[in-house]
Amino acid sequence: VDNKDSLSIISRFQEYLRINTAHPNPTYNEAAEFISSQAKTLSLDSQILEFVKGKPLVLLKWAGKNPALQSILLNSHIDVVPAEHHKWVHPPFEAHLDPSSGHIYARGSQDMKCVGLQYLEAVRKLQASGFRPLRTVYLSFVPDEEIGGHDGAERFANSDIFKNMNVGIVLDEGLASPTENYRVFYGERCPWWLVIKATGAPGHGAKLYDNTAMENLMRSIESVRRFRASQFDLVKAGLKAEGEVTSVNMVFLKAGTSSPTGFVMNLQPSEAQAGFDIRVPPTADPVSLERRIAEEWAPAARNMTFEFKQRASVYDKFGKPIVSAFDASNPWWALLEEAVKKANGKLGKPEIFPASTDARFFRERGLPAIGFSPMANTPILLHDHNEFLNKNEYLRGIDIYESIIKAYASYDEPARDEASRAEM
Ligand SMILES: CSCC[C@H](NC(C)=O)C(=O)O
Ligand SMILES: [Zn+2]
Ligand SMILES: [Zn+2]
Image (tube, rainbow, N blue to C red):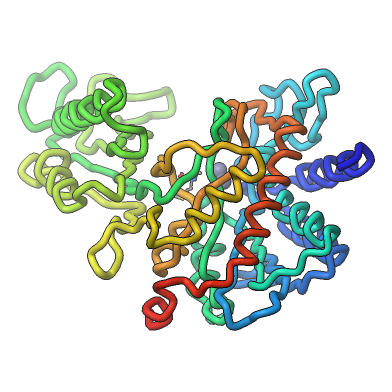
């Protein structure tokens, strides 16, 4: 690209970043209009789906020459997490471009407005080069990923519209990489959000007695901490990657008897609870973890109960872990590797994404999905203060996608498991 082109590419990125799509009140309509107007400049078919009122999903289509072949879906989410404005060096929705470093500061610069617009810019470059896709390429811009994806990608993946798109491969977000190797993900850990509750006899704050709610809860917390340490030790020792162990972090504690002047100090409460964000790798045994929860972390014998606020399934309906193959059985994997190499990029080893993305909804439907955000030499700042992406890294990412989309959209072999998948 010449300088004038890169300037307009960067200013389109800034324009998207300046639309405040942070929860709890994302301005989805403005973002949807922006995407639609971009699609128009590329002559892509564009529709706005509203599975839930006020939560638009923009679906773009670049029709392929052979519509009988499975299509390619490039997915990104429109929403971003909130930002604590006063803790940023530049306001999070100004998309300030630092002239000396080339960093673009904005909420969503890494997670993941970059990817959404890089897909579009790659399509623009391919069109300019005269390329026409053999397979149809879809681009989806979905709402609500950051709050669970249920009203966005989940509804979409389970819709008739999606079924009729005959998708063969999904690309979705990955993570930035501080090294020169891009990170790439074939699966992700499953979120289990657990609340445990303890009850016990209330009593005088000066009295030592057994079976108080606090004591019951504390014993559970001790047990959770031992398990947490055992998992963390595996990572610290270099035996397992972050995505390969079960993480458990206490995220809230709720107990005590409050009065208008503060907590009552000489009363042992009759109830106490704690919340945990647990992430279960697809390789873990969910049955034994659930047993551990029922027997050690929230045993009825200790007056405890538990409840899941979220419990994503680790296995599919065939009892197999929900992961995408990265061997010869998944031709899309080799195509991606080759395409990245061709564009002078380097890929790290395939990993399990430590948190959750919308990719899980597509994998649950039996589709291969690859998590990939082309950001090398970049600190991981998603959900952090001062999230930024360097403009040159952003431009390089467009070249990488240009190479991937070209390879995917030109791939003329029917996928090996196409027939079996059609029955699902
Ligand atoms: C479980 S839905 C919430 C999704 C969110 N995704 C990321 C990437 O942070 C998470 O893992 O917490
Ligand atoms: Zn994201
Ligand atoms: Zn996020």
